[in-house]
Amino acid sequence: MLTKFLTKVEEIGFKAAIQENGNISIFLECCPSWRISLYLMDDGTYFPLIYLRQIRIEEVTDLHEIIPTVFAGIVKSKGYCSFRFLGEHNDFSGIEDELYGMYLFPAQPFNERIRPGYKQDLEVFLRILDLLFVYHLFQGDVLGCLEGVEEDFSFESLELNEWLNKITSVLGDEISYVANVRKNPDWFYFRSFSEEFSVCQSPHIAKLLKQLHSKNENNIKYLHGVRAKIELFRNLSNAISYQHEDLARKIFISLNDATETIAISQENQLLFVSDLHLVLKHANSGFLGVAEEKELIWKRQQQEIELLFFWRSVHPA
Image (cartoon, rainbow, N blue to C red; front, side, top):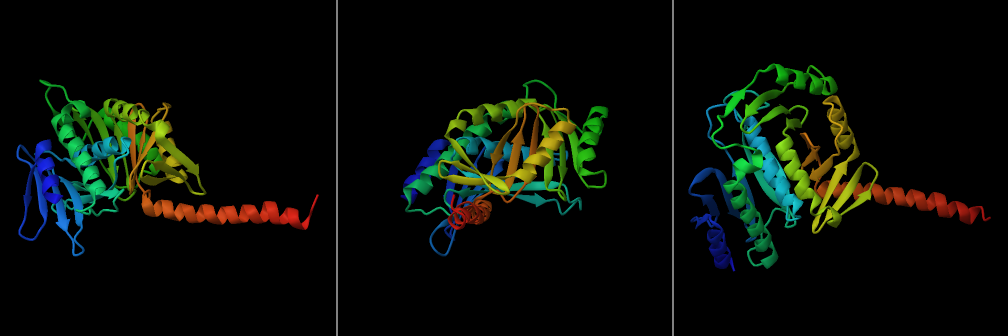
C-alpha cells in the first residue's frame, strides 16, 4: 500500500524518496520552499510535517505566516484536515517577532500519525498534497499578485502607521511587534509574538477564503458551550473561543471594518476573516480544546439537571 501511495504522490507532481532510516522525503524539484517529510516512528506509523522556508532578501515574516495560513484555510474549508502551526524563529536577528520559517503538522483526523496500512489516512494526506501542489502552481493568483507589476516591501509608510495605531489602541502601545507593507501582493501586516496575534489587511485573500468557506458552511455544525463554541465539520472537531472572538471583533471595529466575519479554526490557530482583514490568534482550538469544552458542558448540564429537575421533585406543583 505504501508503494502505491508513493506512486500517487509522484503522479500529483511531487518527487518522493525513502531514506535509509525509513523516513520519506517529498518535495518539488522546481520549488525548494516547500518540504514535506514523513518520519517513521517506532510503532510503524509516520509523523507528517510540512515546512515552508522562503529564500528572499527582504524580511519575510509576513510570507511565512500568511502563505501557510491561507493554504491551511483552503484545506480546512474542504473539511480535509485541521493543522497545528509551529513558527521557526530567527535566531540570527534576535527579534522574537520574526519568523524564519513555518512548520505545519496535519493533525486531525489522524492525530498527527499516518498509518501506512490504513487507506483512509493515506487518502486524506494525498488530498492535502494535491491541494498543496495546486496552491503552489497558483500561489500568486491566490495571494493577489499581478504579472508585470513590480514587487515592493517597506517597514514604513504613512498609511501603515495609521493602520498600526488603530490595532495598538486595542492591544496597547507597549507590546512588541513587527509590521510591514508589501506590494504585489498588496497588504498591511502586523505580528506580535508576545500577544500571539497577527493582523493582515488583504481584501483579495479575505474574499477568496470567505467564498471557499461558504461552499461548505451548511455542512458545519456548532454547539454553543461555556467558554467556546464547538465546531463539527466532517471528521474534524474544533473549538472557537468566545474570548478570542470578542478580541477579533474589537480589532475589526478599531479598523472601521463592520463587514460580516467568519472563523476558520485549526488545532492551535483561529483565523477570523472579514471582507477586508485577516485576524490570526494562537489558541487551544483543536482536539484538546474540544475535550476541555466538553468537560465544561458536562458540568453545566449536571447543574442544569439538578436545578431544573431536582428542584421540581422537591417542590412539586
